[in-house]
Length: 161
Figure 1 (cartoon, rainbow, N blue to C red):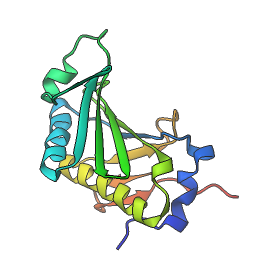
Figure 2: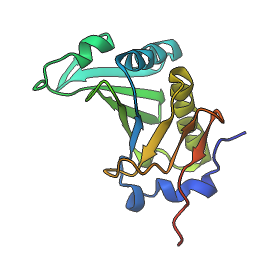
Figure 3: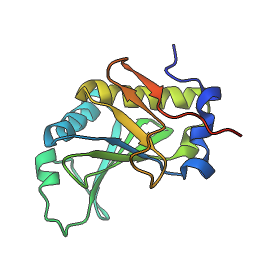
């Protein structure tokens, strides 16, 4: 059974409402949480690409990536849970896992199910909520993985049209 139904949440995937790259985050994270995500990517066999600036490199341990000098370029990890869905993790801070998804790739029930499955796997691995906020509007999640119910749930009312 689907966590969310496209007809119920399609407004939260509207580019005008959310921006094209909503912010997805795991608050109250740690270096160990970042490493758990890196391990999950490998275990699931998801295609990925790690880079620092324009340079593509082998994925390092989270401790090394997050321990880079403050003035270094922000490393990013591109992860494809399926060929058509991309998540871009940015290693900005060790206390919050931060990634973007492109809403243009998340159209319809099938892609929504992939996205929810991705959030659920991360949330289960970390035992923490995974929240999606409108682009640039951190702190106002519209949906996310809820640890207690073990599923992705709505966290905001759809806007009245």
